[in-house]
Image 1: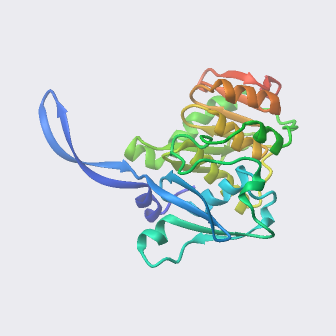
Image 2 (image 1 turned 180 degrees about the horizontal axis):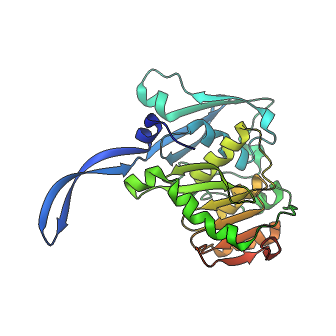
Length: 277
C-alpha cells in the first residue's frame, strides 16, 4: 500500500502562505493538493477532460472507461498510457487509451458535458435512466458485521498519507469482508478516487467486485453510487451523508448504502440485509 516518493510528490505542490494568529503573522511554506486537467483520448478521439490530482492516471482512465460503460469487458482495453507528446504538459496531462472494436461515444447511452469538475463526475449527463439501464442489479450475498464497518474509517484515514500533508484530498478504499484494505487511491475529486480504485481493480483482474466494500471520504453522491454499481460493488459506505438520488439509485440497484460511518455508529439507507449481527 505504500506510495513511492515520486507518487507522493505528484499528489502535492508547495506554496508559501501567511499564517495569521494571535501571535502575529508569519510567512511559512505550505503543502497543497495538486489539481490539473487530464485529457482522456480513446482510439484518437478526445472524450473527456477531468480535473484531477496527478498520479495513477492510467488507472483513472481505465476506471473512467469502465464506470462510464465505454468498455463492457476488461479485455476490450488494449492499452493505456501517457501521451508521448512534444511538451512536458502533454506528456503529463494526456492519457491515450486504445480499445478493441468500433468505438463510438454516442453508443454509450448518455452524453457528458466536458470538462468535468473535480467535485462532480455526473454533471452533464442528459438522463440518469441510462445509468440504470447500463448495469445489472446487485445480487451479492455478502454479509458484514457492524464491528468491521466501524473499523473502516480509521483504517482509511491511517493510509491517507497525502491527506496528512495537505488536508485537501478525498480517498476511496476497497475493503474485503474482513475489513482489510486492499486498494486505496487519493484525489481532489471523490469520483476520480473511485475511478482510480476501479481502474486498479481492472488491471488486477478483480472485476466484478461482488464481495468488496467501497468506502469514500466525505459524502456519497449519485456519481459515487453509479460508478460502484458499474463495478458491481455490493456495499458502498461514506463517512458523510448520501444524497437523495444516491439513495434512490442504490435502492433500485439492490446495493447496500451506508452513510455517517463512525467508530461506534452508522446509518444504513438501503440493503440492510448485508449488515449482519
